[in-house]
Image 1 (cartoon, one colour):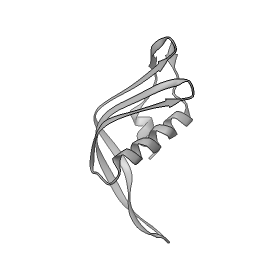
Image 2 (cartoon, one colour; image 1 turned 90 degrees about the vertical axis):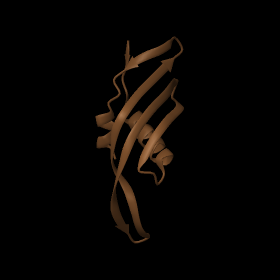
Image 3 (cartoon, helix red, strand yellow; image 1 turned 180 degrees about the vertical axis):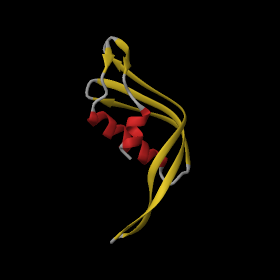
Amino acid sequence: MIYSVSSQLYEEVQERISEAIGERSYFSGALSFDFEEVACRLVVSCFVYRKRVTMPEGAAAAICDLVPVWWEFHTCGEEGEMLNDFSFEELRARL
């Protein structure tokens, strides 16, 4: 059985990786978290590209793209690890 990655899970991954990256231009690490009843783990090394965003509160360098060198996305349920349909391209499109 293949675990289908939902829009909500992509949003969760996007928020968590953005927070983990912080101000860096390169990120290599792992993010582990539970989503609903599934344990998720993203292992990723990627280059971080930014664009300048100006708002009334001030300017910031927002993440506009992540270019992966290596990535793996694991999902585990009650019966162990499940294959999934995670797409790094889908994650990148949500930035």
